[in-house]
Amino acid sequence: MPTPDPIDPPDLARSLDRQYVAGLVCMALLVLAFPMYRIGEPSRRRSARVAVERESIAIGKETFVRQCAACHGADAAGGSIAPTLASREFLSVTSDQQMHWIISGGIPGTPMTAYHVDLGGPFTPQEIERLVRYLRSLEAGAPSIPEWRRGAKAEGAERPDKEHAGRRDTH
Image (tube, rainbow, N blue to C red; front, side):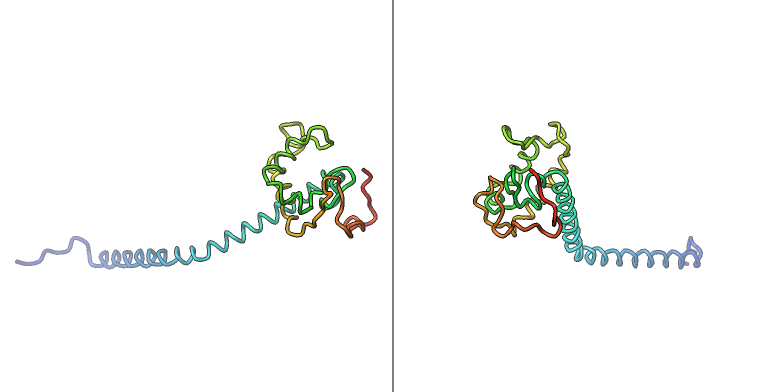
């Protein structure tokens, strides 16, 4: 029995074969590319997380300088009318959530008013979170200041730093 003629012309069959091969090559490249991408992904995510954290701390510091430093001192290192927040004693016993609550709702009977926008203050929840991150970033180098509640400064901290040289808080 003779073989039937092919349905597709030979040129079309070769063209389809080339398309199949090209598709398989692309698929093989993708199969190899995804694991290579995944290998580098954790370090990219880590770098992005660190960059976001740095930016958040920097914005928190700007907010602190603008709104909080008059009472708590430059870099939270002690003011005349409010507690020293950059002290080992404060930072080691106060959780991030507690700081958030204090900033949000204030402390009744003290000059520390509510700063959350829902309570009449100027800060959104994100701004309060950035303030907390900034304060937490001070923990690693925080000195021991037993009188932190009275706004005491660390020993040797009486001289103004370069950023605030010549300017004194008047509170």
